Image (tube, one colour):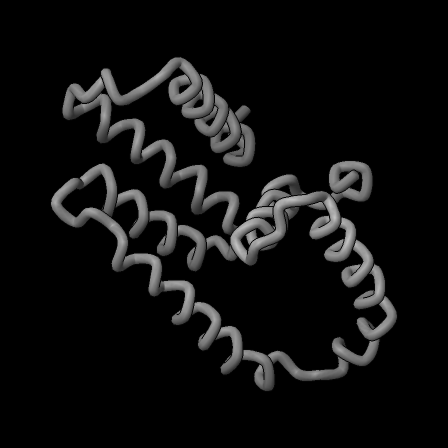
Length: 143
């Protein structure tokens, strides 16, 4: 349904993941989220009247609270912390979380390959890495 309404797949996945993390395990969580998003369309004109400067502090707070997950990283392993840093940095610089995740995944794969830890990778890792590289090639505008 998300693709039908031109909603990026990653956003749909993140919203679903947030519902599961909050304890929702059934499809009712997704249906409730969809209904609430539809209701949010009714107040969109009012929300657009709020200047960006007024919402910036709360977005900074949300961003800082999301960083708490970094304490769970294994900082002894380069393949763990470097992709996480690249994901955060690239997301900030491109204003696109999908680009951050894609680049972090490619870096993760390259680190695993360069450190010869091939036994930790499956064929799906390689396929996804190649698809991300094709994605970056396609958005680069190279002809």
